[in-house]
Image (tube, rainbow, N blue to C red):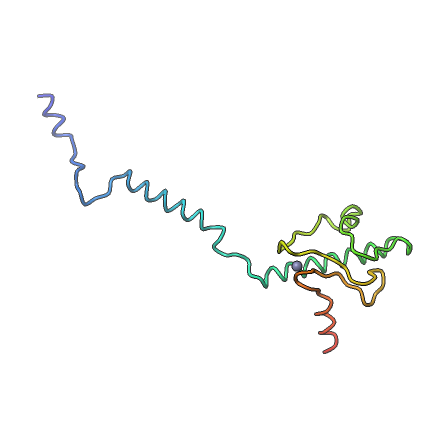
Length: 138
Ligand SMILES: [Zn+2]
């Protein structure tokens, strides 16, 4: 009698055409893991974006150098780029984030003079040259 009651309530799960709940969960978890792995690589920043970020850094550094040189005595002018001094004197919040590993910020000429000096990146080049070219057209 008792066995008969269980037999009636027992639902038949042995339908071979359907997935079990566990199989569905496993598939969903695998898809989620694959999606999570692919996420950081979906949109790598383009080279032109990294170049723009680099030029943006150069403009900030150049501005910081100019502000520094306006505030100090002429004998203490920053003539070659020293990012650590700019950070220490709080003209830069922090060392700039390099958009490329090979970006190294350097200076050419005497930074305390208005002409023929510039801050540049050894990988991307410099911004002033571009600005100079556009000035010539104007
Ligand atoms: Zn660069």
